Length: 270
Image (cartoon, rainbow, N blue to C red; front, top):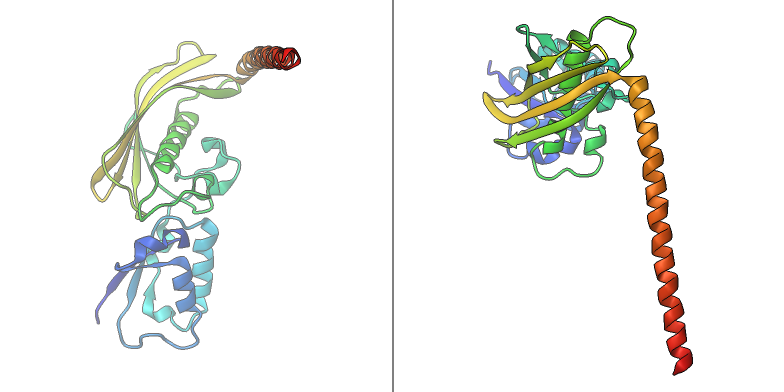
């Protein structure tokens, strides 16, 4: 029997499936819900999980497939091999749908890999979605999360300091479109300074690879610092910004008042 391979992506990537061996999440659920086999004696279709699917989407498909009369036509083996999504403690995201990466895996002392795991409900897909590709801002955020996850898991010293991260510089280069198929992110620690435990500095590089092509490369320079120290500095700077802003508004109001008074005097003289 023939074997067909079909990609499954989330509904927001519906433009991508047109004219390809691909279907959306809703398409597949519809097929699984049919009361009779759709294409008897046509062989099995290997289903490949693509981008945009939430962890709940994956579980829903597996549950519905287990009860479907059409289960014999589909191979879901790849769906049981998906990596786990990184926890919020590593990515600094409160909502799981906003985490875009899997757990980082150490390859060498300073090189780590993870998988891109887009959930279509994430904050960066709520509005802008054009064409078939994955928007560049998602790759930036995924690489940023990868950088944080690697440093959080492998490079923070064991002490009583509660660290917060401050980004100082970022560079981005796009080499190609990214599409809603599997992609990996390789993060490398290029430089690090950890002599002062209250201020750790890092220079990192992240490369997003898809289908054997480097679609994007990103560099980050940042520091991990005592959160309490950063909080005090932030509060001081916020107070200064508040005073400066209100003073500027007051100056504007006085200028507007002066203009209005002069305009009224000219009207009286006329």
